[in-house]
Image 1 (cartoon, rainbow, N blue to C red):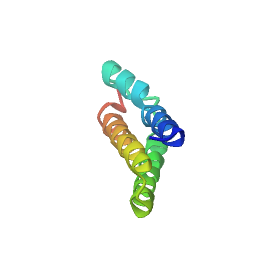
Image 2: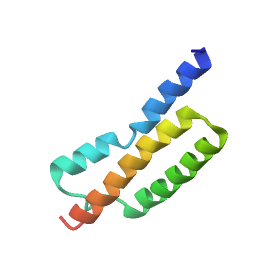
Image 3: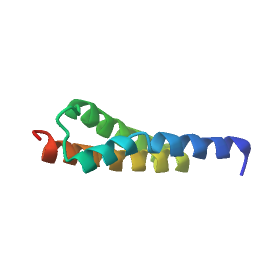
Image 4: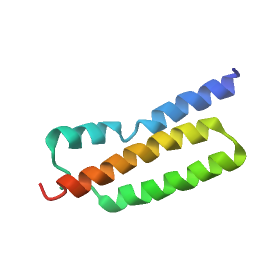
Length: 86
């Protein structure tokens, strides 16, 4: 594995887990009142586009990173819909 690939995977891992602290906090607090649904909807759509792009150019780093981001964005949308009024 080249240095560029290692850097790509490391950057992808950091990027993929950017939403993790918010997911954990929202889950623990059972409150998403101050969370922007619009932001996570935009992120969700963005991740779908990145995933399609990753498949088009056959780039596993892009696919993996954005699959995780899509999952976390989806979880945040679900949490916002469930706990948004609390």
